[in-house]
Image 1 (cartoon, rainbow, N blue to C red):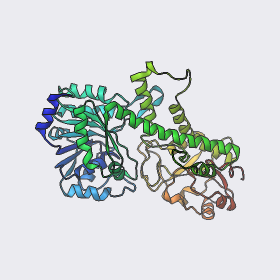
Image 2: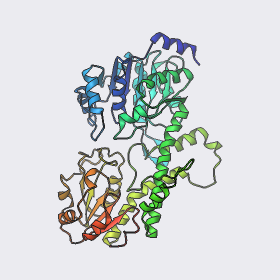
Image 3: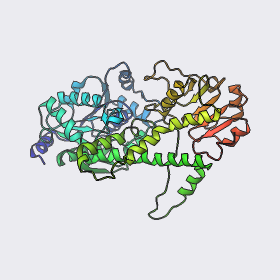
Image 4: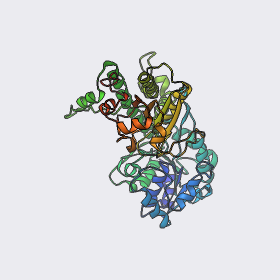
Length: 476
């Protein structure tokens, strides 16, 4: 514990000015909730004025939300804090020098998961910007999901080099990972317990002071920075593992001619003290920024911090990495179902209507979407593909990709319709009407999200295939 840091923090007083670097799905709601705390005088949202995301600065300063999708309460909260002059978005990182605390909510993807080396370019740029303007007594918090050990090593080194200050003596440093899901961002930040870990006790206490006021139901759980890093990567890894377990059972049920969803209901019915058997849902694949990479952050952290001490079955693959591979396989399985429904070994010249590009229902979040994986697989086989998604408006990663405006336009002339996202627009598709739109006598439909009723489509003359529907997949 540093007496010098404690004294600097006492001299600085309560946290009144806060900065959030990264105006995305985590940074925007976090900034608005901080700005809504009565004791906070000002919150600055830092956003690069880049071609792809610079538009967010003007939108936020007008009190508008740049995130599409249903986010209860977020639009109103943005208007409130902007109108009240408690929030401002800027690309001027020199304003960091005015702050008491600054948080980094920046993506940390893996360019190639096989080499277990993450792309920390954006995070290190953010840390350098903080370090340039860091002042004694300030608090720096990493909210990004990161490889265990990053806060205490990489972040510390960059901040100290850029500032000339010493972490734990001149400034506080901590990790407080976000625990949010698109569609309930504000609720998650306020109600989920918050793990807060500093590189020392003084840093932890200062970070607790920052986060406690925004929690309405959740509690702050103090721990070390590395423990907080492991907690976040582990909880996402476990969710990915649960999804993989459901996906594997769905594949088993298909092979055995069984309805997975009946089995799931049976398994879920076992309840009682100390009994936990609830299963998640299978599907066409796992997307998003977190689950697709956090397993690799955990694996990398283990290799860096304890790989030479690990006692594990020899030559056995990590259970967590295997689960990741199963979930990555599901778009390939969707391709198999497509070929099976069309009774063909090749998709060359086949017309496919792809319904849903976002990875999550009723949002525009298309980060690492399984739809893109399926698209490339089918495209490589020579299929002609049209895409429909009312939530997603553009494809930054695939600029020449185009959306059709209506479902009718998308499915016209299609040999097969693929449901890859459970948007509300697809949960009430009419079998007869949709078939008429295709103009085909016996079109195929592949349900990757269990959103349609198989019998209705079979009765209307469709060829049906669905994830986990072994009881129906061989009836047409």
